[in-house]
Image (cartoon, one colour):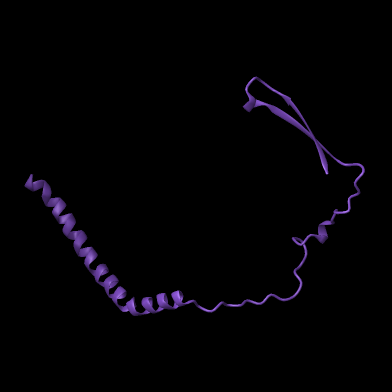
Length: 104
């Protein structure tokens, strides 16, 4: 469809060569494939109505859901216990760091 002509002008290093590219359509081929902008699917509205279809849950998804449901009370108990113990442990560590200088 297009003719490409390369001209190279540059230094001795092949990585620094510069190229000029000239492209021109063939004069003997008619433009049968030309499309207008409004004919492109990107710019036109889709035909028909789209419908969301939810796929059924797989056995793996069901098993994970049941596991999470059964573990939820234990996880919430652990989170609550940790949130209560964390401030006490932090104050204990700070107290220990403060008294460490007296020991040395």
